[in-house]
Each structure stands twice: as C-alpha cells, then as structure tokens.
Length: 546
Image (cartoon, rainbow, N blue to C red; front, side, top):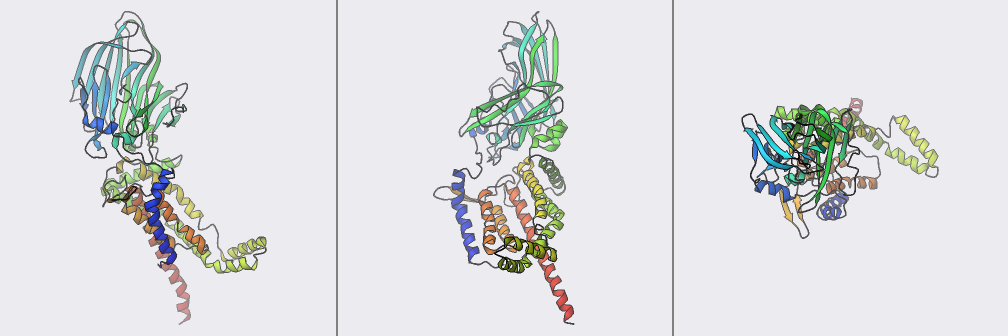
C-alpha cells in the first residue's frame, strides 16, 4: 500500500480533529453527551448506614434493608455488581422518593403508626414478617401484615394482609403497593454512560406490551397513561438494571415520576406499583394480596425466569432489530460458557458473522472490481456523449449489460448486512455481562480502553488504542477496496474514518474490539480475493506460452 502526499495530509487532519474537534463538537451538541457520575447517590449510599431500626434480609445476590416502623425496603444492595470505583456494591437506593420498595400506603391520606404488633426475622429462609397496628385518617384502626421473602434469581415475594379491627368499615380511596423506584444508571454506578436507556415497561391485562421513555422535560406529561390500565406486570429500567412488580391477579397501574437535583444535573426518577382504587375493608374483614418483585440486572435468562415477556425490557435495539440483538446476545453468552472469556467470545462472534456474510461480501467486492475495470470505457462514453446526457446514459447501460455488470451489485449485498451490524452494535453496547470485564489492556469491555490521559491546555485527551487501531484498519480497508469513482470522490470517502473517529472515540472497548476484528477480517478477505483474481488472470497467459 502506497501513502501519497494527500494520504499523509489526511492522517495529519485525523490527529488535529482528534485533539481539537471533539471538545468543539461536544460543545455544539454534535456528539452525544456522556452522562457523568452524580456522587450524591453512589457515595451517599456507600458511606452512610441506615438509621435504626432496620432489619436485613440477604443472600448471595442481594441485601434488603427494611425499616419496620415504616414497613418499607429502603435499600436494595447487589454485592455482585460494583460501582465505578470498584469499592462499593451497587445500591438501588429507595430513599429518593421517600416511599420505599414494596411499601403500602394510601395516596390521599397518612396512616399513623400505633405500634408494631409483631415481627419475625428468619435468616435461614430469608423471610421477614411484620405486623403493624395503624390508624387511618378517619380514626379506624387496622392491622397491616407484610411478609418479604428472598426467592433467588433477584426475586422477592411479598404478601400483604389487611385486617380491620375497628368494628366499622374502612375505605382507602387510593390504596397503593409501591414496586420501587429507579434512577438513571450513572447515578447508582458512577459509570460514564453514552446512551442511557431509562423507561417504564408494562404488559396490560389483555396482553398489550407498552414502553414509555422517562422524558427529560417537567412539562411533558406524555409519560402518564390516563386512565391507568389494568396490567399483568409493570417495571422500570435503566441501561443495565430493572425493577418489576407482578401479582397473581392483574392490578391497576400506579406510576409516578420525580426530578432529583443532584450535584451535576437534574435526573428523572421513575416509580411504578399496583393501586386498588376505593379499596374497602368491612368490619373484622381480612384481605390478602401476593406479589412478586424483581430487582436486578437486565439479563435475559433472569428476566425470563421471572416472566417470559419481561425480556423485552432489554431494549437493545429498535423494532424488529431488538429480537435479532437478543439472539446475538444469547450466542455471545453461550460462547462465554464455552471459552470462559467475553473478549474471546466477541472475537468468535464477529468471525461467525463475517463468515456468514462472506459470500455476499465477496460478491460485492467482485462487482466493484468489475465496475472499476470498466471505468476507462465509461470515461470514453462520458467524453464522447458529454453533450447528450440521455444518449450517454443509454450507452453506459448497454456497456454494463454487455459486460454483465450490475451498478448496484456492490451496494445491495452490503446493505443486507446493515441490520445485523446495528443489532450486533446494540448487543455489545447494552450487555451488562460485559461491564467491568477486562480483556487484554482494556479494564472494562463496557467502557473505553483508556490506557493513559494526556493533559492539554483546554481538556484531557484520553488515549484509547482499540479505536485508533479500528480507524487505522478502516484506512487500510478503504485503500484496498475497489472503487469506481474519481480521485476526488475517493479522497472524500477516505474522510469517513476521520468522521467516525471524531464521533465514536469514546465507544466501549467491546464495540471497538468487534469493529477492529471485523475490519481485519475484511482486509484478509480482500487480499485473498485479489490473489484469486491475479491467479485467474495469469492462467491463460501461461497456457498460451506453452
């Protein structure tokens, strides 16, 4: 490969854009902002213990901190997942809305705690039972018994029992069982998030699936469903984690949205649950409800164990591509089960996709090579019929038919690969399995593989080797790709790696690893095809010389 003067200038432009272009483009909003850490939650929950009284339920997957006087889960700690500092476990802190997870309340009035009648903590079975005597706004008293049980696979079972002990009927206009609230992922983890996914998901009682984005504007009320539907389950999710509530019988959706002003910016907090409007409890009547809740990572196998339809909460890609992305994620996890390394699994998955599309890519390269070989004759036609564009077009079509060349033959096969490319891109960007997993020099396959940071006058420049390798391989691939365009257009095409370097410099290393391997495979494929063409062209000459 020969690097001419223009190519060297192109490389110099790449360096300048990398240093100067990114901060300028980000200041104008041309590059998506990366959500930075808001330490107001991540650090607060890690360095502050809950106030007494509290009870603890725990297993290997999760730790529930329960406040008996308020009958709520105030913290959901996940020891298997660490924050960005790797010093503290992820804590889905439930104090932002001051309601708590799996709590019971009436939104129209406040209940007064008379006394805690009974409580029992069984650590061996992961069960905690709490009975409180409460006084309603009208003065009537009732017993509220709540039982929480850790059920494995990040699930919590909850039974709520009401017993009227007032001797008169009780009415709760807006009885609510709160499933839990969820903040954006960066607030819990301290991760830099490029594409934060934060939304509410639900399945209605008649089987209709819905998802609604959290929104960022306070005056945007499109988030709320009016009237609230009957649902089989409802949940909220961020980039990597979700909370879901379901019951034995469909319930009326409770949804809420709050704005939390932390240290850096205003964040949206989502909350879902079950509500029972105009709940009535006759004298001495007892009513019970059973719920199941999920508080954990958005891992397809875990979501399906909770409820098969909740796997759609992954939101890896848009529309039909989401199904393809989930299939690719399943393959990636299966490969990891075989080879034991997600980095190696990404390489194998990339090669599998490239091999699958090898015939299509080879056909596209062959078509472009034929078009390139026709360029001298095409140029003659342009010059000969430059004053008659219509006749020029007819002659070009005749030439292409005579030579058996399809002008779109190089484009259509490549277009068929685009859906798979986007699905694989979404898979690697949204898989919590890749978070904090090292490979080679990359410390985290879900983050950029920064090896050092160069302090400059106006910002710090991170050095990310994989994205630089990816860009270099793209340049090599561009030089090797047969092009049927004039030199000026070819120079414009060579600017594409610069644009991608500018916009994709902070991509997660899992993505840049995939892209680098894919580009390397393409280079090998083109070299093999070139050798095949040379051998094919040289064979007749050898026969003639005998």
